[in-house]
Image (cartoon, rainbow, N blue to C red; front, side):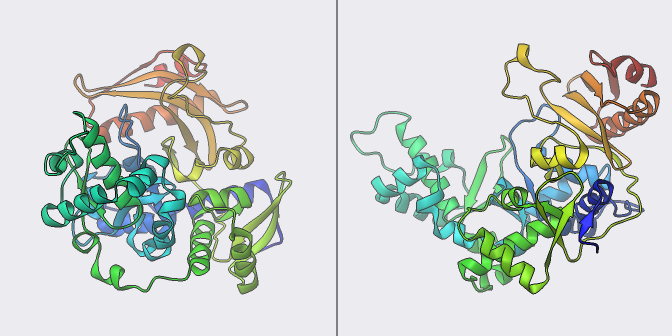
Length: 401
């Protein structure tokens, strides 16, 4: 490809890299389609917010359309596993093939794990050992299920030991000594030893040197992003600064990364050598706030001219667009955003707010978004889409609905 890209070219490269230019399934969505998405994106983020649908399910919907969510559950929590839980970009489901490249993070738990976990590992090594033994003997188990199996010290007060058991489990998870086997109905992790969770071929794969693993992860991020600047290459797997530029230089030297300039970016970018540039991207879909395409908000703004921040933790009176706002992708452009809430008891998809981007055709966006909301509601098992309540697109969208 050329040494410079127009903004439109960069958008098409990025969308293709994330799987938005792939042909939609011609029939029922299968494990083959799911694997294709993970081959593109590498990982999806987990999040506990369930006002619409759990975050990790939505990126597959955005790329495949309506699909049975138990397909992802089977891939993550049933043998043979195609993906596994670990810390990738925050808590994530990752392709199992990435496990060896993340063992350096497990080995460095004492440096990178949260303070609570590190303190447990240092101050209560005896507890950590007992928790590890309990998981090996009884797994898969939740923290609550083994809480009473761990003898309390006489100085422990009620409730304190449970939090330490959970912290010990999370330390063991971060350090790779236990893995997540599945989740219960309350979405609590159930832990087990890696030998009973991960495929034998993955466990048998040699652990690469840390510099090789870092290079593998930078390459995987570049492949998933298509074209990216330094900040988002590091952000994809939350890589440390140390050793990052060396990994980039080595990938440039090998020809896997190609230095390019992108119109309007004002900074160096890198293009993956396998990146595709389709003539156009026709995908129309909603994106989760946690979709890998828009993880890095600065890149989202540079690529799409779309300023986006999630407002879940913003006080209600200070929110601009809404609590759980999904960007709307229409033919390769982010043209609007919609605040959504699924009322499963009444079978209604509520639309607290809908907004359009400047310069778009209101009628086109409203019609396309109405069709997409009906499709989304059907996937969620909801019978009705309620009129939009506020926002500059609320009136036209409600009419289209």
